[in-house]
Length: 294
Picture (cartoon, rainbow, N blue to C red):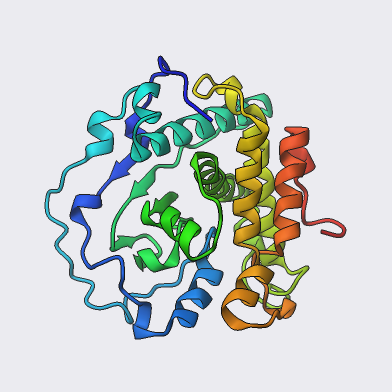
């Protein structure tokens, strides 16, 4: 996967506050064990459901200072996206939002852009104080995607994914899938409550639809003008990442057993399946995970 060298990037869609972060990436939320961190990741990883953890992560009166905005200042071309990870994220965000803007327009709807915030350590969001330990997430309260780039190292080392550029693209596109759900009004209607968890619960169906939306964008990625045509290797990396964050795989790895009734994101096979559905059809209409079996 590579960007077209002459593709103009719009860095205004990304806020880079990494220089303002407080606290180390190694912080354990609530002082818990690694299993506790994984449990929190299972709840928040790639979702719009972010708990207010300000009471368990330390003081909230943080002075972030002026900080530099490296991505916003420097990521302006596809050439840079091919050379730097943060510029690559800018390119993904640009491509994903270009696609969804066109898709909404074709459906006589208005797409509202969402910024991605790059941070390190911890950050105050519209959903409360969050740390790097919760992984990437979309906050519906402020309409932003939050991402610590260190997560992609964790995806390889802790979740044993192959990683790579298009694994990153899958994650970013998944989060914007939640933004699309938010704009369509389906995110708020598929939240907690009875029946939220479990292999066919609303939470799993919400996550699988975001996976499907990620695949839909992948189908159209090269037509947005930012990326060269994808290869089967690129899609393989996305599918590998989807499998790595399946509930069954994470539970087996970190708890030693699988409990489908506590699933919030879906199994590895389900996540791969719905990304593939979106990628093969290229149509958001085929991403109805709320009707029928999943």
